Length: 326
Image 1 (cartoon, rainbow, N blue to C red):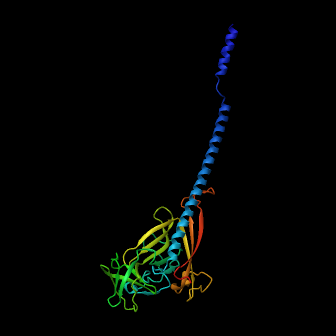
Image 2: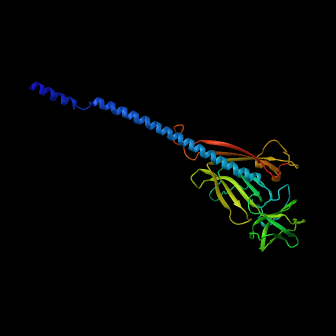
Image 3: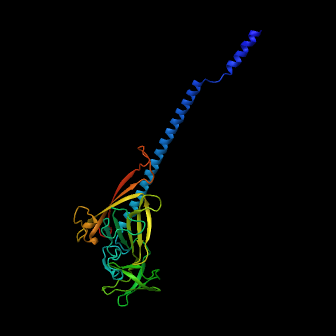
């Protein structure tokens, strides 16, 4: 009886015994391996997600930059009347000599780094070194055209069909089927728009022509104000003097290189090769522009084990100038 009771007591003690130290170490090791594997999968997925998201955002930025640049380059020098019009510019006498914005009827002017009117060099956001810039004028992409009912050269006035919203110092174009006049608004009285420096005008704009504001836009790669290292920026101006508007258009653009195709007197290509801005002697003969944009992901994706790894792409773009194509 006592032996049977002792046996049952021994069995209960044996059943209540814990795991050994070896078993505990093995269990911990297996748990750590499982956690490590899960962590490795999580980190790999996180890197993959960052890569996909960064590249997708960069590609979207590239499409946006290409769309905007294509539109502005295509419309360079264009007017609401269209066609290959004879240009008469009476703005320049109102602007100090050497002002990059002065000759408002050139359509476009390019600039290699630091060779001319490179975008802001004395105030933020600065232009990124060794990048090109492009200044474009257009009277067809902005504003609402207003019909001209009369142009009187002797008094230097246009009479419009409705009261325009122009103010003195605005740069405006007047055009009909044969010519395009670029002038600075001197005064606006009801439907009458006055200007000065019209001595060079010998032919009036025909009734039925149009008035429209002329805008200039300078594209360049400059310092970012939203976190990216650099961005594609645009300075806009519609007056001969006063402040300009500087907008950050596309983040993550690190470089912009621009070349130009020059045409002959008939508008046909004078050469088959695109050239740098320094080689262009007459900007009114440029018929196409080739832009090469470089973009990079804004966040490091670490795809090669480095915390500072980014992905970059180069995007080529060639655009013909609508007004000058044969």
